[in-house]
Length: 147
Image 1 (tube, rainbow, N blue to C red):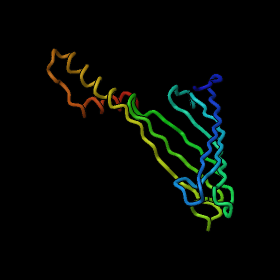
Image 2: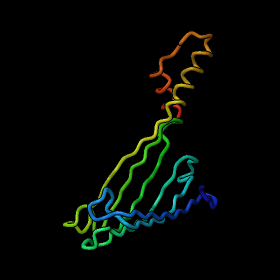
Image 3: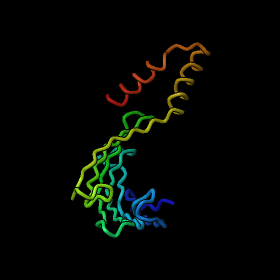
Image 4: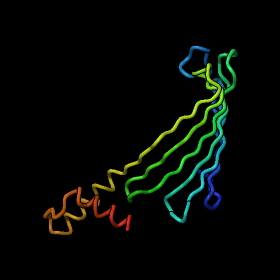
């Protein structure tokens, strides 16, 4: 369940795993908090998020891990979203020789059903004759968003 406060979506998570030091997950306890903000720069589908995570490793010889992260999700077309991300991990459990590591990421969401529906609609509009290719449909959508 998502609890919204206008444009703001706060979150809190906690996880526990009954593991030993050599188990599949190195963390016995994990907690995270954060905030997501919708409607960034006046765009209904864009959002920005910030979070903080703390993890207690099963191996007591290791330090507790902390992480801060941020992401921005932008809508390129009605079906395609992109989201660059940045995480900074302090005392990484899986890399105990490092004090801090940074991880850049890039996520993409593609709603294939929306692409197919628009292509099908265009072909039905012309009496079943496929007047435009899927590529042309994508190009016109991109131009409509960009202009």
